[in-house]
Length: 145
Image 1 (cartoon, helix red, strand yellow):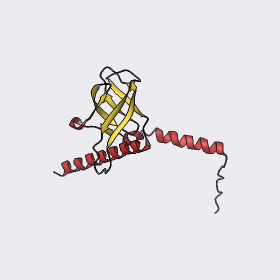
Image 2 (cartoon, helix red, strand yellow):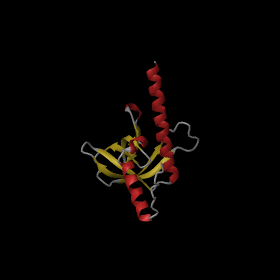
Image 3 (cartoon, helix red, strand yellow):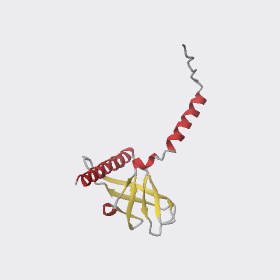
Image 4 (cartoon, one colour):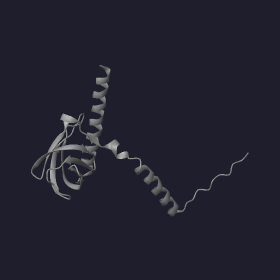
């Protein structure tokens, strides 16, 4: 028995539409959680935003969230962090403009990094990965006891 082979289209318009459909499917799978590090309890990262000390709730290469203290939407400030990255041989100082995009009803400021170099984005990716690995290792040691 012979099967008729489906004809693939080489029409660029169809290829673009197919890519858009695939990208929408990926985005709808809520994948961003895999690349965001959520701080637990006492290990929170602190920083200064608009002359006020705040504790970071979570961080990703795109931005971070923290509990606000009277800030407003679109407030912006230059922030400086030292990311204590396990197994990182370079300088772990991080600096970028941080802009508040949204503030939830319970005062959580969701922010985006601006004017970040590729190297700084990669540093945050490395930080998130290493912190996730550290949590997994710590969690597995607790379970073994």
